[in-house]
Each structure stands twice: as C-alpha cells, then as structure tokens.
Amino acid sequence: MTQTMDLGALGERLAARYLKDKGYKILAANYRLGHKEIDIIAQLGDLVVLVEVKTAASTSPVKPEEQLNSLKIRHLKRAAWLYCLEQHLNPNKLRTDLLAISLNRAEKLAKIKHFENIF
Picture (cartoon, rainbow, N blue to C red):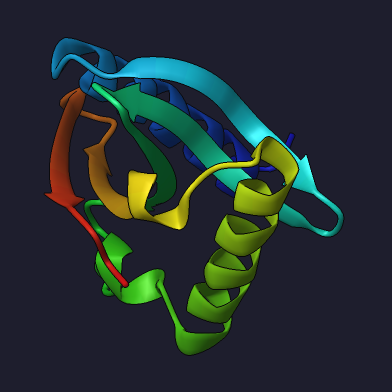
C-alpha cells in the first residue's frame, strides 16, 4: 500500500468513527458503482448521506477540501444518481457531504471539517 493510499484509508476510518459519534449509521464503505466509488454511505434518521472523504497531511500546502475538483464533483453527482436508481431511493432523501481531514501523524492529531450538502 502506498503512503497516499495509507493516508486515505486512515482518513476514511477516522471519518467513519466521526460520523458514528455524530449519530450516523454506516451503511457501506468504498461502495462501487461501475468505475465510480462512494467513500462512505451513512444514514441519519430517514436521510441517506453519501460522504466523500479527502485527507491530507497537515504539512501539505493543499487543504484536503481543496482536493475536491470539478471532475470529482461530476463523478459524485453521477454516483449519487446511480445509487438512487439502484436503491430505488427518492433523491430528496439523499445528501452528499464532504469530510476534509488534516492529519498530523507526528502528534497523532486529526482536524475534521464537515461540509454538508456540497451540491
């Protein structure tokens, strides 16, 4: 596993724990829809939340939330649409969030920013 993949996997584990602590139920992780992937699918009440997780080292010049570019947003929108079709889910019961995680491994600290309803 590369260092970037390792960082991403750690970020996704921290994101799942964060969501659970906030009362979300984790339904799936790394959910594949063809060539697209949803990092985390969670439920909060009657709302299904698709969560994109972006993780960066605290020393990185780019903030994790800045990693979400227009191409990735387009892929997320397509994945959300496919998920609704596959699950027979009303799109009004769906939200897409971003969890931006900045990791300081030396001090074992993580800062998590939660952006709700990103599109």
